[in-house]
Structure formats: structure tokens, C-alpha cells
Image: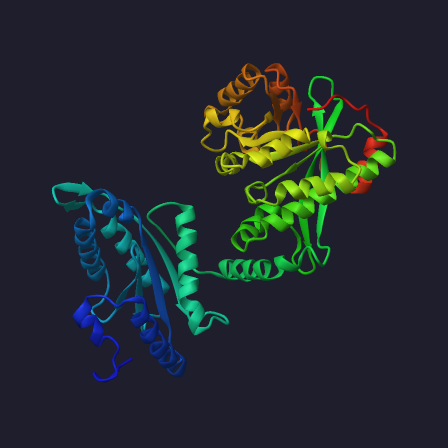
Length: 440
């Protein structure tokens, strides 16, 4: 693939050393047109450098510039003279390989880059260690457009980062389908509430020693017309990204209270329900008024409701206005600190919110016998008792886990071994057959 000197965008490469993002896009557009015409192929690599920002922050921009030059020199040794290198941002580079038909050759290039970049750097009498993650995308690929090639390579790079440092990953059918699904989720999630696609299930919670029913946790799912049931772990990150968590959280809160009121009308007066409350709700100025409106119009006692807040949200929520905290206290709503043990807790923050319970993270439970998790779970139970807090275990899936928790005086628990999440009709039938225990 040849260009005349006058039209070749690579002439800028001679003066700058590497393209910038704009120059790369211009060159890609011309090159991809040529690929389409010639029925040939090309590969685009995206290389993300780890710890680059840390060098700038700790040693200054001069050291960062020196590192940049050294990285470029090392990248050049890994590719051919006619291959194009571009800098996408501070710590990410793109490499365009044209007239390549051998995927193994490209993989070997990626391996050479990883090895070269991970070798130590000597900068201003400092020994610097970095690493990198490489994403690889082929063109043409299925119905990939000119615009999506860079996106595909970046997506592959992010996947390689998820797998660990100093790896490469090739954009694949699996990533392609995942990308399509994510686009669908992001585009259609905003309509999920108005189309009545969100729904709740309820998982019972038990006193572990007596097996008496103690309450339930409301769980949210999204029934998408083509994707089927989408779990919150999948769509919550997108809801946060596009600013929908406040609306979704408030919908869930109202739906839970309405269902609790219906169960009370059926005679189930002592039903306790917990549900997740998100930082986006608690930090919004109008949330306290929403709470007041709900309990004014829906006949479900606020003291039978528990808000579950994750550890990560707790750090944001220490900035809660006194007005919101006073309203939660005035309504006598309980607060449970959820996923305890999964993050980096600051115990001092436990005194800044009216927390009544700690819920042990279900990931700790699923890996209970690995490493030091048993000891950590014991410590959490003991800590909760010392702080006069209730302790709840989530994710109980085996008889052995249940025995361990009972032996170590964990009071309450939930999980598939005890009872799977139930639909509203199943939960109604469950309530007809249960002895109601005391509140968690």
C-alpha cells in the first residue's frame, strides 16, 4: 500500500516522532479506504502503559517526558519502519500494522512489546518499572466500521487489563457480542421503568440457630424483551454512568413499600424488608422529601424498612447533610452496611451513620475456606458484637458454611442453601407458612 509523498499523512511522523490522535484518525480513514479497495487486512494495536502517571506525579514532567521518549524508542524496535505509532493520550499508544495476514505474527509483535516495555528504565538516577496491556483488533472484522476499529482495539486492551498486567488480548466474537449487548443495555435502560421492565424478587432472611424467618431482602432485576433477565451487577454500572441510579433507586424504594403495605393488608403485620439505597439517592437534596412523601401516602411502617449501603457508598455518604440523616433517624429506618469485608473500611465512619447491622460480603462466604477468609469472617462477627451491631451473613450456599456461622455466633443469614429468591406470589405463600421472628 503506497502513497505519494504529497498525500502521505505519515510525513507528519517524520517531524513529531509519533502521530497524535487526530493524525491517526486521518491516516486510518485513508488507509481503511485502501484496505476496502484492495480487499486486504490490517491490525491495530492499543498499548496502555501502567504507572506512567505515577512517574509524572512523583518525579515530575521532565522525567515523564524522558519516559515517553524511551517508550517510543522501545516500541519502534518492536515494529517495522513503515508501521505507524500514535499517542492516544498520556499513557496509551496505538500501532497500525498494514499488509499483515498472519495473526501469529501480530501476537509475536504484542509479546515483543510487552517484554520490551516491562524492562526497567533508568531515569534521573531512579530505576522505574512499568508494564503494559495490549489490545489487538483486525480489520475488516464482521460489520466493524472505520469508526469502530479503534474502539474494538481499546475494548480488547481493557479486557487484557482485566486478565492481568503484561498480557495481550485479541478482539473476538465474544467481545463483539458483549459490546453489542452493552450498547443495547445503555441505550434501552433509560426506558426500563416507564415500560415496566424492572421487577422485584425477595430473599428470606433467617435466625441461623432457630431457622425462624426474620425478614427479607428485596432484589432488583430487569426483564429485557430480547436479552431476557439482566442482573443488577450487569446494568447498575451503566445506570451509574448515564445518571439513572437515582430514578431506579427511588422506583425500587416506592415499589418495596407498596408491596410491604399489601402484605400488611393480608395480615402480615411484622414483615421487615431491606433494600439497597445508593449514594446518588442519599446525597441528593430532595431525597428526604421523597421519603416523607412515600410514608405519608403508603401505609408501610418506616421502622420495618432497612437501607443497605455498600462500603464504597459509605465513604461518599459521610458527606450527608444533617437534614437527610435527621430524617432517616426520625423515620426510624435501619441502616445495614453491606458487602462488609470486600473493601477498605474505615471503622471511624461507622459512627457517622446510624448503622444497626453489618452484612458479611458474599464473596468472602463463597471463598470461606481459602486463604484467611475464615479468620476474617470470625473477626467481623466479633467486631460486630463488640460494637453492639447486628451481623448478617449473605451468600450461604452450603451446609458447612451454615455450621461455621452458627458455631461462631453469627445471628442472621440468607442464601441459596436456606432459600432462593422468591417472586411476589411465592413470597406471599411463604409468609403464610412462616413463624415471624424478631427484627434483624
